[in-house]
Length: 109
Image 1 (cartoon, helix red, strand yellow):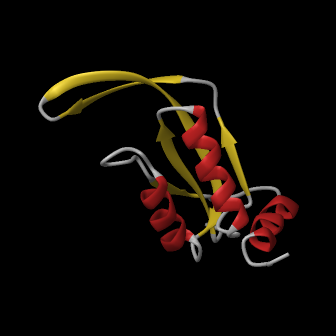
Image 2 (cartoon, rainbow, N blue to C red):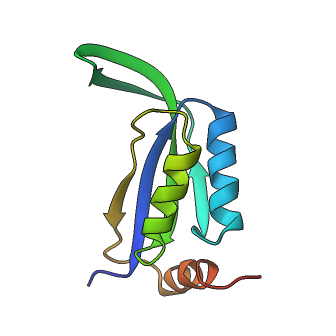
Image 3 (cartoon, rainbow, N blue to C red):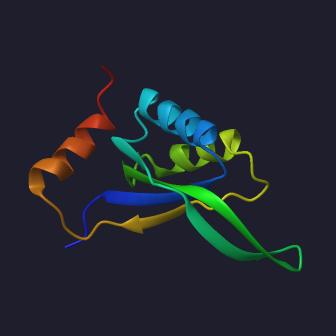
């Protein structure tokens, strides 16, 4: 049973970018929670060259309904030309937590 929730993944180059995006998503009720991971090393191809960089990964808990606005906001704040923004559907989870995510992304406090 797929829920209405998504986990959105987004890598950023530094803590300042991570916190700026997280704060805006929460203030605008586009996410219930944003977890910032310890640095990860990303290897990728860009402009025909192999690259690698240390980045932080954002794990953003949101709903399908909020995703279009969430994506737009991240894209507007993100320092990369082409940011990683991927949404993965949440298949199952603790009912109380799922309800909390929905409440946080629909209630303006």
